Image 1: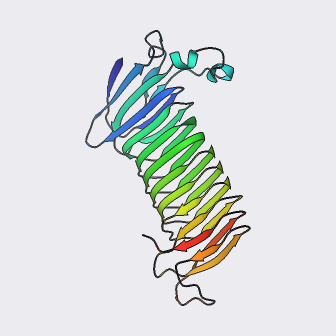
Image 2: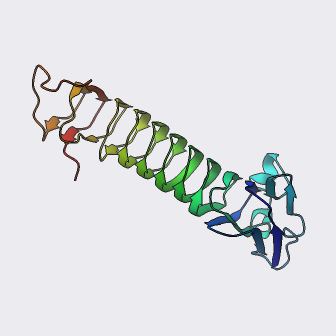
Image 3: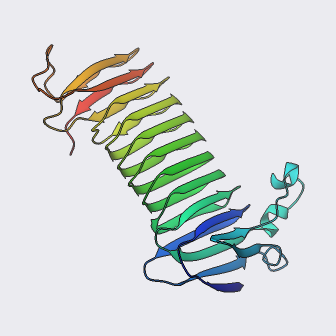
Length: 269
């Protein structure tokens, strides 16, 4: 195990890149130093010695060497297991982050700044992004509790769960479920297969899926223009549906299209 402490004189950015293991970030208030702890999972690995930890101007970088090609795929023996690394980083709250891994799980607790998170195959957990979030992964599950800005999410296969999103949401997935507690901006989602559940929406919604049920929460007092289609399924509404809007404000537009699955319009819980 190696622990390194770096004094800070102001806000920083964080860049993290490791292959296998885990990358854990904790953002804390009122600290003036960054702490990085590296632990190799294998006793015969030199991955800790080969991991660079340095502050370049205002950017803190924690990165293992790039291998590339079939060696990163770990098809030729146990290199992946030998080079698994648990990296723990403590930085000030509000730190902007760019983190990428191959199979290493990613955990961010506390309040980060803008975040760009990417992984090949892993579990991703993020507590609070105070800014915009860009999220990309090939396979896995992602849980994000809160984003004050907008979200762009892309995945090949896997479920994604969001709490409250202050801005817009753009989501694309080959197969997987989308769950959002509340989104205050516009929503656009495309999926080959998977359900979509939006607890409460406050902007325009455009959902499309080859197969999967959809649930959309419409807050009381919201005027909505509906365009809903399902090839095989039912359309159900727990809210009044009329030919002409009653409200005087600008209505939001909700478009929902699925090849197979029910579409439900509900009041937020």
